[in-house]
Image (cartoon, rainbow over all chains, first blue to last red; front, side, top):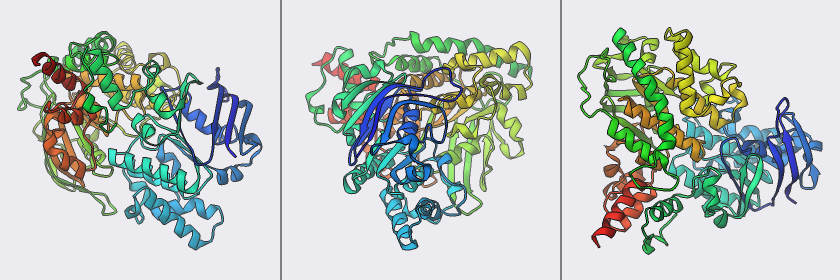
Amino acid sequence: MAIELRAVRYRYAGASKDALQSIDLRLEPGRVLGVVGANESGKTTLCLVAGGFAPGVVGGRLEESARIDGVETTSIPTHALALRCGLLFQNAATQLSNTTATVFEEVGFGPCNLGLVVPDVIERVWWALKAVGVEDLAPRDPARLSGGQGQLVALASVLALRPRYLILDEPTSELDPAGTALVADALARVASETGAGIMLVEHKAEVLARIADEVIVLGEGSVALAGPAAAVLADPMLAELGIEPPERIGLERDVRAAGLDWPAVLAEAPA
Amino acid sequence: MSGHDRRLDHSAPAASAGATADSGSSGSAGAGNGSTWSGSAQAGRSAAPSSADPAAPSGAPSAAPSIELEGVSFSYPDGTPALENIELRIDPGELVAIVGQNGSGKSTLARHLNGLLRPTAGRILLGGRDVRGLHVARLAERVGLAFQNPDRQLFAGRVSAEVAFGPRNLGLRGAELDERVRAALDAVGLSAEAASNPYDLGYSRRKLLSLASVLAMRTPILVLDEPTTGQDARGAARVRAVVAVAAGEGRTVIAISHDMRFVAECFRRVVVMRAGRVVLDGTPDVVFGEATWPELRAAYLEPPFAALAGARLGLGATPSAASFVAALGQRARNA
């Protein structure tokens, strides 16, 4: 079982060039795969393709093989994809259904559509809200949340589906540092406890350093670097690929560039 | 009004010079590799007017108007309280970052500054005058707000039309309008996309586009809601350069951000919000200094790593990489 892309090439309808060129990746249940890359390097497109959303829902042309648990995504109907893959959009506002009056109902919207009985829906909603620390938002109007709160609720609404694979496009982009740490820990827990495979697009290298098993770096629609998270995040190539390294690595580089030694006492300080 | 126009004309060459500052300033700060922005931020600092007169009348050509919030409270119509008794004064040319937990009222505060929201109690003064009597269109000439979510801001079918919309509403036409659009797109690195549809751009570039459309207004006050969100290293450097250039022109820049590195490197004042109130207000040295860490953490924030590292080594307040490197260098020379 896995999401597996082999030499995938993808082009949006009407586009003059490929958004993805020859992508190989494998996401197994229980693993966290980090994806980083410069602006416009294909991260969001990769999310749509790996989740079967492109070409299925958005159109365009896919070449070679994108499979979920051995089945080509192009032959999986959307409702069946929804059971396998939870996809969190980059813009939380586009995720919310705009049909519900409270956050509780919003998070219950997906599980209801899966046909679960009401007690199960209720159980899942509380579980998902607690996982991202927003149970106190349950009675609030989803249209009147702050940007970061909306992002947490959107994430909860995807978690509540309990999909085998979670594909998350910058889930912490609008979160404060505490919210970011909370989400990172929640995702690590979801991966280990529910066995979900998580693909995580993330600009914050700290988050990936904390929870990713492997990291791939995209550059212009191809995989430019791939490997264990710690090794990839410390790779000097990152800067050339337009990626900010984790804060500590960046600071160490600045110190050395000024001709100074990196103080040994900082080696064991938290990243 | 002619004096106002002259000031706007002056800022045109400075804005395009900013794009070169982005790539051309290796920086005396010595932060080195990959940190061209710290040099330009430094340039912005030294170029900012130190003696801007806060009492200048609001129509004065030389300075942005001051902003004063007096006892400002706001509740959304569903009763959710968002701001409680905010007292804040921002002088012309200040560089202010507003930080705080999700839902602490930062964006609500930003929307008050350009009149999208009106306080339910208290008042807001711009250049000493209550904004209550000012139409949103008049406020828009003074205060440019780039939204947190670009998709709530963008609507045109072409990138150039999107950027032209604001200045066109200010009455600009022809070559002058074209120049505004060109300079704004140049500042955010989107010149090559002028003819594209905004929705063919990825999120990060839509966000830069929303910034460009606000820059094109050349307002004396810029309010940026999480400008570095979703940006890669290059995009973040563009945003830093935009802030530095605006500062160099004496404009007031107010940014909401969760990016503490950006805050510590680019801003001279940090306002910390928690549950609709201002709980800390000071320079990055003070706000990210060891003494305030408990308060910061109570507001669900974490100081930048450079500040943690500086404290660990007993270097004092080093909120930014540049200040950390400088303090470490100083110690090495003394030893």
